Length: 150
Image 1 (cartoon, rainbow, N blue to C red):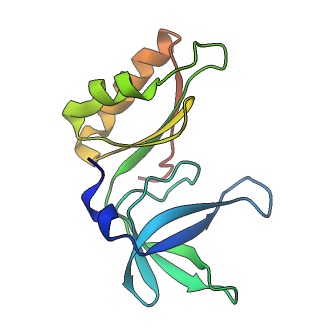
Image 2: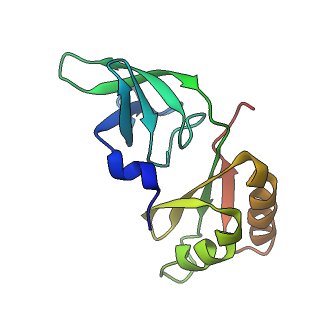
């Protein structure tokens, strides 16, 4: 089952990826709140400081793309990225991750078999970070938090 608000997605919100080239963008599913704002209903895989369920201000480009300009309402969710080593056995690494993080009510987006984005509510963020840190210490994955500001 997917994230329920994603069923009402009606736009793609474009975010510039910080630190990337001038033309590096990520399109994330959104649900329009009004003419100039939208709720993020997809999990950001590459963008920092924009999280599932946040509301963002949007500006429409002359080409008709909705570009995020700022977070208007921070819902407090945390996004983590889990990277599986290129040398690890190929496969669906995300399945055990999903099962083990299920008690924390996490949502997932699998970019590919080696990169998984994980969203969790603020009350579970430390437990999820601890779980990922344990797996990182065992050499099973690497992870990073995509939320840079509290």
